[in-house]
Amino acid sequence: MNKKIILTGDRPTGKLHLGHYVGSLKRRVELQNAGIYDRIFIEIADSQAITDNAYDLEKVRQNVLEVALDYLACGIDPDKCIIFVQSQIPELCELTFYYLNLVTLSRLQRNPTIKEEIKLRGFQSSIPVGFLTYPVSQAADITAFDANIIPVGEDQLPMIEQTREIVRSFNKLYGNILIEPKELLPDNSSCSRLPGIDGKAKMSKSLGNCIYLSDEPEIIYKKVMSMYTDPSHLKVEDPGKIEGNTVFTYLDAFCKESHFKKYLPEYNNLEELKKHYQRGGLGDVKIKKFLNAILQEELEPIRTRRKEFEKHIPEVYNILMNGSKKARSFASKKIEEVKSTMKIDYFNDFNLINNQVEKYSDYTEKSLSEKIDNN
Ligand code: TRP
Image 1 (cartoon, rainbow, N blue to C red):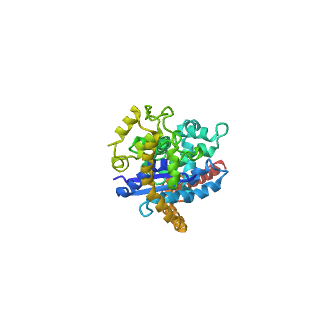
Image 2: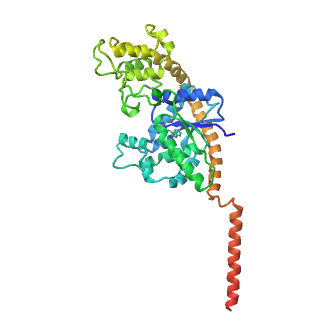
Image 3: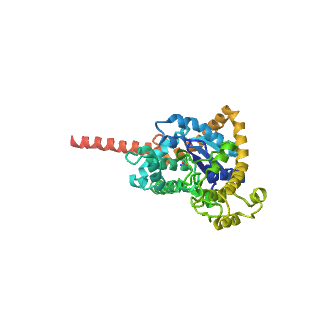
């Protein structure tokens, strides 16, 4: 039977936010507690973060800990998951270097996520090569651990597709030893990509439109109150739009029927609330206060747990070190298998050595007899 191996991760470029939470962290905790997976790897992808932060390594260095704290705060359990730091597994660089030969430049340039990121980072006129090739290193992250289930948000689909292509090429060329991964998307589509509080497509630190998991309650309240809704919904009586209205997108992601009983008993469910908003007569402040109550309830236990771990920083680093050691032991077995399949394991391959011995002994015998003939 095939093993069920999960791998996923985040770049340590900032604290984690609600987008990370609904898109993946919440799911990871559910997966971890499901108890049906053989192994779960969670990677702090610092090497990948360096591909667009090569001139600001301190940022990456600081955020390795922030991300670890956010993981633990959300309930990721280091006894059930292997939390590791990418740069501490040199085998991943080794794998990447071989995979780079299986991918073309134009294929990398066609990657829609990369294209978008190039625009966002202003890399149009000069793209760092390392940055352009990070999808290949992500293929190494996944295949080094034989991971076949990759819980990610929509924006990572091109990376999984790229990984599958590399796996197929490798298996066809060298031998069938790599596992084709499959993505596991959030089941609620509004969770796949939570917009920023300004309504922009994505929550992103650089856009300053995030609600962080570590935000204090007053900050959360302020951010919710400033959220983008429907700009033409000026008066309470005006009919309002649901599509593109960030508050409703967040409600789609977070709201459960039980929240109505608790915080907004005049309505039975989200459908009713939406209908009223569309008809007119429902103000933005009311829906924002409702959303605030829901988010406060969700984030309070996370913040409390984070504060507990903040008192034990050396232990948190210890968790990362032990996870990295464990992860490395899996990756180093895999790289051995890869190298022997590619036949670049010259010193352990007795067939190779014997064949070379034979080749040269043939040659010496032949040339010797030729010499004798000539005389
Ligand atoms: N690219 C992912 C992100 O930006 C992070 C990541 C690195 C990842 N390696 C991975 C995700 C492997 C899934 C599997 O969020």
